[in-house]
Length: 397
Image (cartoon, rainbow, N blue to C red; front, side, top):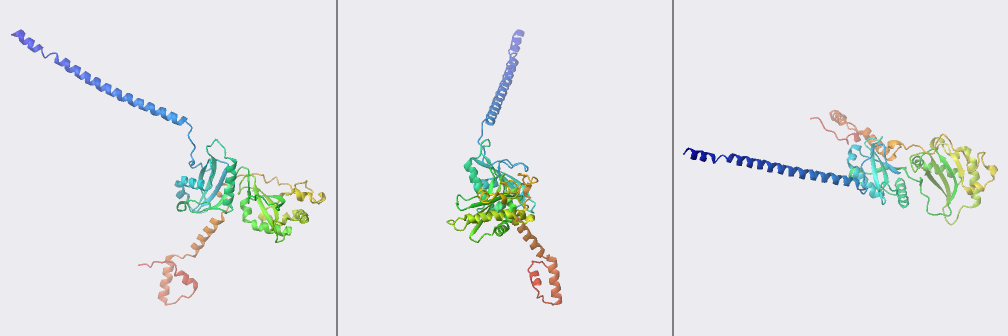
């Protein structure tokens, strides 16, 4: 009996071993599952890193719109600017919209637009600079695109066309000016052909195209008077800046003459007469006011006029230059920063606002004046008093 009991007691002894094996298997399975999950995670991360590296190495197509540039740096040779009668804080979040608007209006194939915004010297306005760049960046703008861009920009500064922006966001642009253009610009551009247009002379003025355009009528009037032109003779003024800027100094001004009737060209005797008049007027600065136009420099007669007068009639300066250039005024200057040039449209608008503010009378003054009128029983008959009562006023309760 004792052995039998011992045997019966010995039967359940392997159970703990079996239980321990089950626990080990469960732990091993859990570890295996965890290892599989980690392997899968590492594999996915490795694939992601590989794809990212390939994505960064592959050449990507350049975008038509690029982010806002540093305020002091504007890439691209073709640059222009304008003013918006909006605060910069209102516009800065709409840079991409402005880029799209400009690209739609004056963009050409294989180009993109860069925009930077600056606080203007005019109150509640923004000075916008934009550049036209090649797309892709490592290429160059084609000759056809350059010609089209030059034509578009000159038409804009001459107000022969409009730069239409999203009106609800930007309003109307004012005083568009060209800051730089490869190959220079001439305003207005020469026509395609006119056999009766005769060049008389060109002269350098230490002024910008922007400044001369403001005084263009005065310039034409003085030159017409000095050269004794008849009503049948048209005076043509072409202004060229070699750096392609309408706000940089200096400007080469070319003076041409053409008859009103293209079939009746200017006669030779008239051109000889003009050559003598021009030479005699050099000492008088061509009749131009120095404070308005500066002193003329480097005056050159056209080849035809140069050959039509005897050499003894020339000034002592060597031909073909009748006036030496002034070394104090270099040929190229830096661009005026942040819209420092004047914008008559904004000046008129701000002067109008200031004028209206001066005419306004505070509601308190109107209330006191109205109360005094009722108390005294007087009737006001003056125009000023009538205008005063047009100002809205709230009576104290």
